[in-house]
Image 1 (cartoon, rainbow, N blue to C red):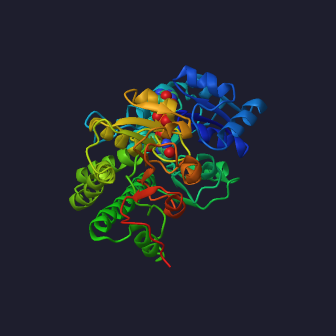
Image 2 (cartoon, helix red, strand yellow):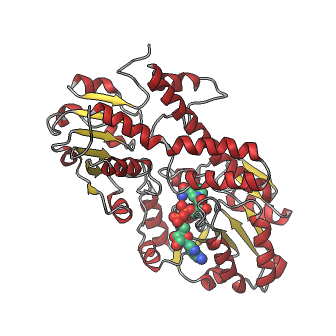
Image 3 (spheres, helix red, strand yellow):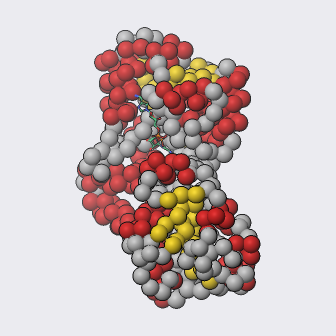
Length: 440
Ligand code: NAD
């Protein structure tokens, strides 16, 4: 099928490449000319596993190309995925829907024949109906332009795998005709397809992200209780997760959720709950946010205690800038929140990240960075592990032992096996774990 993907960001690029991989002819559209030039050279402007290979292969074969022209997209495709951003508005609580309605408004005059718009962005409930009205008023094809909501569940760091092998595909469809097109589009993937009405599809996405945030905040709240009571949160999390009603996914205690999705989606879902009169839901979700907002402070307390004194003038290495491993995305990164909090308390911070130094530097030029792991440790009073990259988990504690001023590692992601580090002479501190313990 001939499809366009409007908005080439963390969602749109893997989606465009994935659609080419399953056999469609794809044209990606973005307003950012520099990004389009990079993509047309078969290169990825974001760090994401397997993406460079897909982009190189499909731009070379001619099945995938990129443009800034919506007219070109409308001429060459009958299905248009909307994958533009939905950041928060100036109020910090509701979505700024400007990119979604702006892209639809700009595309509309070019829609001279029947077309299907498939929304993938995460949006305010009711958006599909508003877009359908807008397109009916402004597109020459009128009501022959239908709108489907097809929320995206990909995880950054696994974006290509999640696009090609999703757990499920959700499609909120307005008609049988639209459903048939969606079924044909995704048939090569073979994932379970949940077909529902558009408001349900919009709600599924908001509820899914919010539940993930609730789970993360829950185990972090328990981590605080463990820290105060002498219990080991890692054993608690692993063991309650053995109950299939609970599960271990999202149960890693740490410094909380971040990135371009969860923080904003939970805030916007909370605002939607209030607007819909579901005040109890809003109270529950706000509690999850408050727990998340306090995580950097819990980290600061642990680091201050481990260093046994004030932080002013102390050289501290922070391992990790990306909001999670596998991506160079630093939007609302808890690792950088901790680094900045330590710097605000007078510590001399060096941040290491294997892939996210350029994106972190662009957003937070006030911090010092390096992408050389051993060099990052030189002379440090402590190393703070803030993003659970495998580079840190797999590092050799014996080789690294003599580089810092004192061999102290503070693991804020409960990701290290403390035994080899302790055996190599390091002091290890972990959030919510009172000491080195091995459950039998
Ligand atoms: P992003 O900021 O990385 O990308 C958005 C892109 O849209 C940018 O490249 C921007 O230049 C482009 N754009 C804006 N207006 C445009 C227009 N009029 N025409 C063409 N391009 C335009 O954002 P993202 O992380 O890719 O997220 C996009 C949406 O997908 C959001 O609603 C987000 O919540 C949702 N989502 C993201 C992920 C993720 O992992 N990042 C996962 C699921 C859902």
